[in-house]
Image (cartoon, rainbow, N blue to C red; front, side):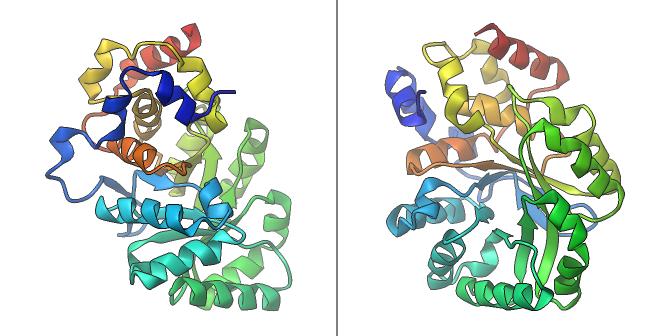
Length: 296
């Protein structure tokens, strides 16, 4: 499998794929979208729980946070040790309130959850955790009252679930229909577009925010486009790299709040942020984008 570093090494356009677009240079912040039913917005490009976060590589993590803060980025997904390590960087920079942390807290006795949330909030310099979610859908449903209790007590602001795989979409849809989630995190991309069939429209209809994982299918996307020339018509929606091609397709869906990108490379982070600026592809162009990837 080709990772992104190797892919950029193959590309003669690599130099173009590491900068915020020139037309965006005078814009202070990356565009953001409202969380339904609130006056709070999430920037359209976020940071997933990357290897540098999970391995507590504080130098790289600090570089990534600085890049996002500089461009008005906000959403950072953190789990396990990264809740504290990445949180401590934000706290040391007095930037905790500028970042929206998506934390993973697993269902357990409500007292234990309360203690865990309080510990993580203190480590992140937060008065309350922004988002608490879990990948365990069935346990989340069974323990939903515990999550809501934390929210009612002011320890947590939003609750929800995070999962990838179309096989989970049915249960996630039922959680949405039953009013049990504020925010969901699911996969949606050029190569995995199934969420657009029912799940994303349902979330929009029910006022549930949507964050997207696996935009590059865990790196496999770059295997698909390796050696291919970016279509000239990509310039029509201000796209300068294959990474932006993938991300702009996702951001173009109106139900999407944030796309979570995972990288340990600051140059890649800058390239990813570039996808948030400029025009987005219309429906006809999105269809052409999918066909382009299918033909590779």
